[in-house]
Image (cartoon, rainbow, N blue to C red; front, side, top):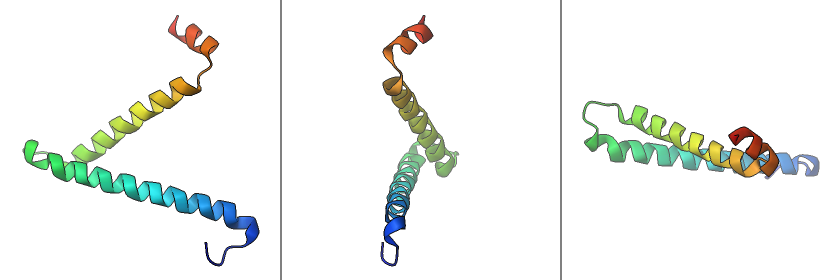
Length: 79
């Protein structure tokens, strides 16, 4: 945040926060891949961790979609 004007402070803070979140999720993905590597003989641990991360993001997206959906629209979507 050093050297940023007052007008750009909010944007700089958002970029910093996004970078922090991306770094944390990348680290967790790597640790999961390395942790599952002994159990998955013959598969690439980074491919496995990427697939697990994608599955987690999909699950989080479904939860966020469900939470943000108004009740009337959800009833119509479900039938």
